[in-house]
Length: 94
Image 1 (spheres, rainbow, N blue to C red):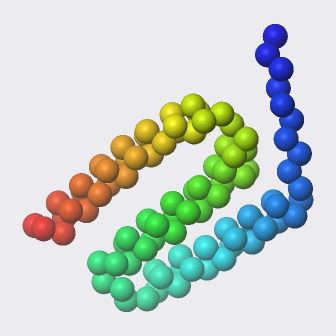
Image 2: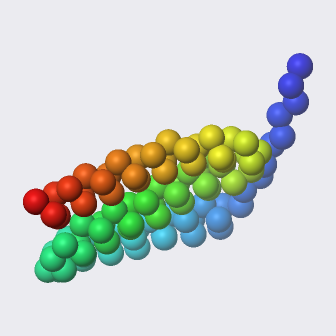
């Protein structure tokens, strides 16, 4: 039988991450309203990536997983980032 480790995360940590997510959402709205040209899409993707990382790291407890699982999660994320990046490069240089 596999033993599970229980990780107790303080409420303060969850509230701090929640406030960070709310702040990043406000930043996303601000960036969407600002006219940044081609940079606005890049900024939105970076902000969304940071928000997704916070959710994965704290709310889904990836912080407490073994390194192998973290690396296995990194592979599809990097693959998706490369595909999205190549798509943007294709669109920008048409």
